[in-house]
Length: 270
Image (tube, rainbow, N blue to C red; front, side):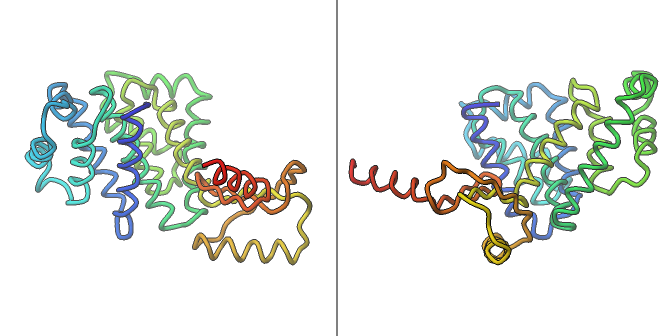
């Protein structure tokens, strides 16, 4: 997904963050349910992504489909996607799948912090390893004659200690792999978990080793800045000209002399 679709997805994920203070896994379940509706109707996908249709028209269509059946947050999330721009009709479904999975991931993070994300990742990896090592299990999960309920029940038996968020994502991958094998879809979900975990890891570049006191001050300062207990990985970069560079997720805080000089040159040139 690239271009305008990528921008629309980023906006949807940013909006999702604002809904998670009191959200439960039900939000993810509702969004996956909306995805099944959209996936099952090509005409609906075209209507929701038609650039000639107005935003209010698309939002009204979403309301007709979902109002009274899902929460206000779920309806607003789908409406937000529908009123965004997409490069292709399929992109809205792909984006909704990512948003729904992230809703489950973010709830696991809110409830358990970095440990919640680690457990989620471990559960998904456990399922991937078990199924990936057994052709019989792969055939059973792909069996067109078996009911979705039976395949989901089998899948959850493979990871009996799975958390609620893990179980939700495993059921989704087995019930609606959307053209993929369940393991392949779960591998994509694992990538989303890993990206979320980056928010808990600070990659710090310095010119020389930090003393214990410096590290403690850095740890306290970054924890206070980001409002959570970060894991700090320190990298010695001899090419860094003084100062420090910190990367947490997609955010970079660069206080190196080289960067300040470069900024000054740009200002002088402008």
